[in-house]
Image 1 (tube, rainbow, N blue to C red):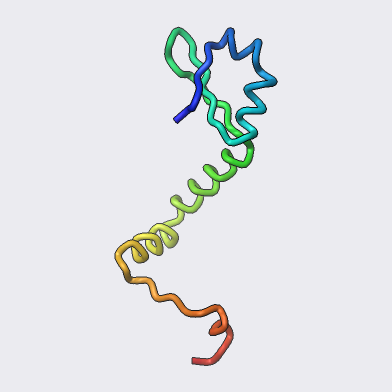
Image 2: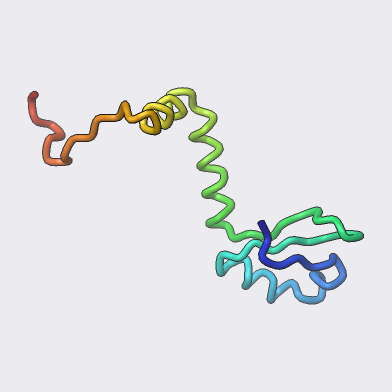
Length: 85
């Protein structure tokens, strides 16, 4: 979760610094009345979350992950791609 949390008032006055923190990979929480209501995170981190959600929404991808975790995945060397077996 966030490494640092700021009140809305404090975040407004420190926005440029908080953006730099987020860009560097830190997750920054924004709190109102003591409760975190939002997070600042880098574009790269956000896009990674979206990509993970897309993969997990795909039933074939979820099955491949489950098969791998269960030890049912067979790996071949890259050199074997395209060769007739």
